[in-house]
Image (cartoon, rainbow, N blue to C red; front, side, top):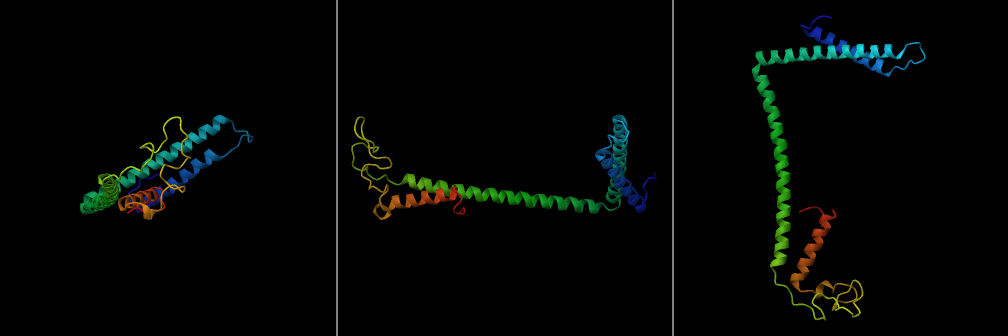
Length: 187
């Protein structure tokens, strides 16, 4: 085996690497239990081809490291250019990640402000009924499930009968729920 000093050596080394790889795969995949070879011979062949593959891989790595060293000494601007390109790609990736986080932060700020605006409004007076929570005291017949006292049989009164503040809050909650379920795109 010759030491690669020129481009022909690189092609030769690549061919040797490919042959060693194929021999390694062949020794690992061949199945000859009935051909008279014993298990020890197969293991020895596998070990030999694997070591050859590792040796050629190390030679190829050394070859490319030598070429990299030559480029860095003869043309140092190429090395700097490569590093600048890698850094600019990394900066772009991180800027995109930051933008994604800023967008999410704005969504959460808007959601929080919607919630705070809903809590800062004065609460409407309680509906008349036997209990402020809408539940009957112990011992009495409770309302049917899903109905509160003072509510029509359909559950919530029609939107037009709600005060304007409650309409807005109800709509905001419904939009938020639809966004959380993925049925509406985020803001």
